[in-house]
Amino acid sequence: MNRLEIAIAAAREAGAVLRRKLEQTRIVNTKGPRDLVTDADLAAQTAILARLSAADPEAAILSEEGGAAPDLDGPVPTWVIDPLDGTGNYARRLPVFGVCIALLIGGQPELGVVLDPLRQELYYAERGHGAFLQIGRRRPQPLTVSAVAEMGQAVLGAGWPREDHLRGQAAALLPRLGYACHSLRLLGSAALTLAYIAAGRVDGCLHLNLQPWDVAAGAALLREAGGQLSDLNGRPWQIHQRALIASNGRLHAELVRCLAAD
Ligand code: 2AM
Ligand code: CA
Image 1 (tube, helix red, strand yellow):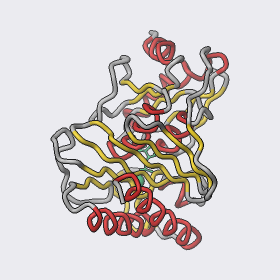
Image 2 (cartoon, rainbow, N blue to C red):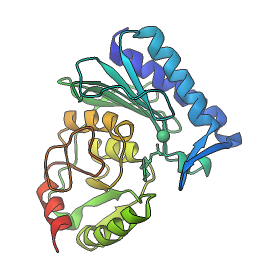
Image 3 (cartoon, rainbow, N blue to C red):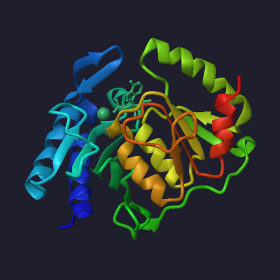
Image 4 (spheres, rainbow, N blue to C red):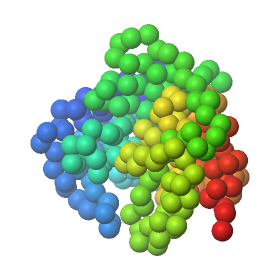
């Protein structure tokens, strides 16, 4: 198996765990204000770690739910995983959540996999080889971002931060997007929002406090699907930044301008 196949197999195993546990999931911990962990996050993580460490023992691993934090910028290939992106949705049985697995080398995503286990939608990309969506066992289809070039026609995703001070910033910024765009969607899963931009379903998004595991896989998808990622000032995305603007590329400059307006 090559690394993409390993990542896909691990994501499918975690997805099966999430499907199985959905109806009887329990909140086992509260990591911080408004930050939950369920037994399903942990069980899905266990499945992924077992698969990755057996199949790729040389690589380092960064996972949301624990373990040491490896150096993401170094030359050692590093798996960056979020066993469950959208835990808040999952705990409420809102059917918008996903499994994210990416491989980083030197801070750059080499490949990324996002799986929506309820819809059996598998999004994957490898650097230089394009991005694809496989639904069920059907033939994978290449992904391309939307052609929407005007804010007035754009459907935009956004996150609602957990931290009070970032809520203030979000409350100041979101109305700017909300007035300018066609409509807003707060989906509750940053990774699926990025996958949807790669698939042309959503045209752009704003998130103010993402972690590497929320965004690494989606960044791999978006780059291969022709999208763009940056910080709030339009500077090229890098793995350690918290705030993210992502788009189909055509809208990017306008998004940056709209958010910078005073
Ligand atoms: P999680 O479910 O894996 O924690 C919610 O808007 C989305 O942003 C989810 O993808 C959530 O990931 C992610 N997120 C991560 N850290 C966050 C934070 N501090 N505040 C809000 N959302 C966060
Ligand atoms: Ca998570």
